[in-house]
Length: 219
Image (cartoon, rainbow, N blue to C red):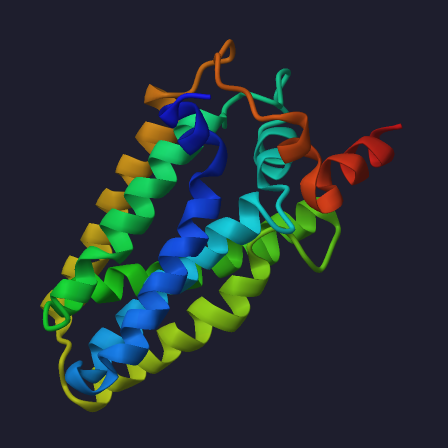
């Protein structure tokens, strides 16, 4: 197995290791960081745990995406496949979430990442659950118990300390939209291929019991 093949299959597992490293650093450097930086590191840790929840344990997001949201003819590889899920999510985690940690005073960078938690709640927690007719879908736990409380605390803090104005809100929204557009283009346009040579393994498709539940309902 080549390095890229391994990475395509296990990027979300490697992310769990990154989360542990980030958590260790947070503990070690706690007294040296400003409050917003601590929140941003926690936000970064949550996105890594979120991806682990979606793809590794309990997993099942590839089935949700391809079978429920897109009703794909080839759900093991279109539109989501091992390659575009890896590229899109690595850009998302290490670009959108990691960068703001180094610039905690650039509020719009951190705020844009915070917005994602609220948007993901409506996506995972409401829309997908309605589609699945379930109270849970892959990614909900880290969203509800991670992103939402961090986001609320972050916004309360910047409001209480007058760190945000209309320009900052607009920049945060603009950056959020731009990054989501980049993510969408990479994941569902540039690297999506109905004949992709990078299908998900059947084990990945079966995780979380999502695929089984979908197939049971269709019988």
